[in-house]
Length: 240
Image 1 (tube, rainbow, N blue to C red):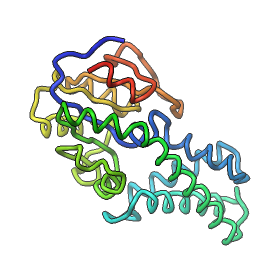
Image 2 (image 1 turned 180 degrees about the horizontal axis):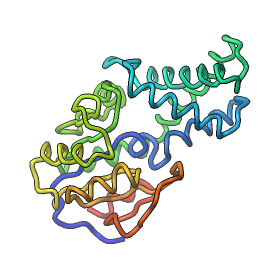
Image 3 (image 1 turned 45 degrees about the horizontal axis):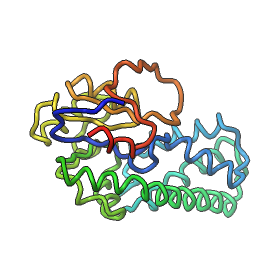
């Protein structure tokens, strides 16, 4: 794995990168559906997941003060309600609430475990480089970063719902480069999504470390595009 030279700053993605260390959130949630024996098939879950993400992007269900545990609760409730409305899941309100709470709680515990490995990486890199966060999120990413002890590591945060631009639009990464104050060629972008992180970051001239892991399928992948490919965020320390 090659060493990256002349890097002056690092732009991190958040969801799927720092919080799950390369697992797509749909896969994390689905694993918890299986663990807690929610009686739906994966295709029905996928439809519920897409519905929930679109609803969260369109309506202000998430407020700036909501923690990540709050976000998980809102997500799983939206998914369960959609599944019930589509008659893909029993409509007993107490059972739906129980499923939603169990899935949300176990997802939260999963993130806390992952952060034991990823937070030290971010902390160490923050001692050597300027770090900027670029994320598609719901307006509460600062609350989440503070809750998880990550906020102070970033000199700037570029959040889609705040700046009005969403990945995969390269413009959001251009904002990240501008916040960094360095030339794009000296900025390393670290993200888990090929289409939403790798492609737009390369389009604005950044170098890219692709955190390749458990994706969600459907993406056209060209592994020659990223500068380096990682399978764990911890590997990044050996490259810089």
